[in-house]
Length: 404
Image 1: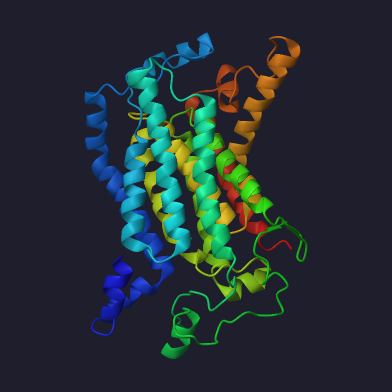
Image 2: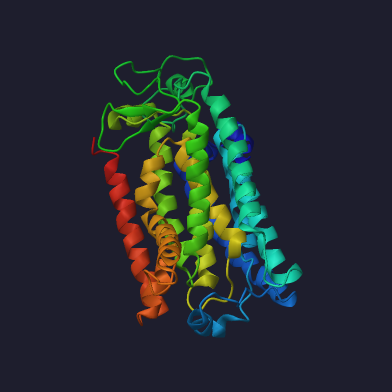
């Protein structure tokens, strides 16, 4: 929104020209989202406490219930402030004529609304019983399908055209306008030397320069699996103070870089990745998401004074998953979000092993972070070590961009 307000005034005051830059708006969005959380957090926290929105204290494991006994009075649904911060920062600083931004923000808020209903039913209406797994899954699939349909229809047009890039002091103003795709210029047009330029719904494989898998209509199915899986994986990771927020921040920074690179024709061609015009604006959304997560850690770090609940975790995971699909880096999410993957797999393996053996457990407790707690590791140590692993995986995911 501010882009439309200030950029036309750049001829009057050149400082407004900063709003052309994706990197400036992304950094500004991160700071703004952080401030929104920190400023509004105490008010939201007081509102949740006033309405006794404490988290669920019933657990399948009695030992886990004992470990978390001291957190019975900590309110949940703190994800509401995350939704507010990301929405405010994105609406103010991203370009709202960008299909990727609008679609991703819609899905993010829709996942958050679904999580809020689940949290509300757990706490207020049904005595710790939230939405059934089937209803929650159907809601997630519906949101993912709607977002993917928009992306699929959008991809049906010319995928590669004059890209949106930042103004350069080394290019004349006419060249900058052409690069931004609004003047009909030819600068930044498709480079036919890049064999990936004409692919629309293909799955790109890391380490492979020319190999990719044409998904066709299966793009919708695969994309839904990525988005719903990411949403649920982050939800499962949200079990220790600060764990999910810190890991999402690391993955969010990774995809902010990915979004910026695939949105530029020059860097996409250099790295042999898909060039997706307009995807660079997702950097602004991800900047807001990272800033909101860091702001939430202000209250959620050990000892937490608020939990994000499904309201926050479903939204964060769904947003990351959709960005991965939109930028055609679904497999990169498996690396950057490796902690989420391992947490989800640990739950799946635990359930199957329990059924196969008639009651035995593969882990002391699932998800995996609780297994380490049961081994005697302090909650803070487990959380920080998971953060470290997330940062290392994020760096490795960025390295994969060049390893082709």
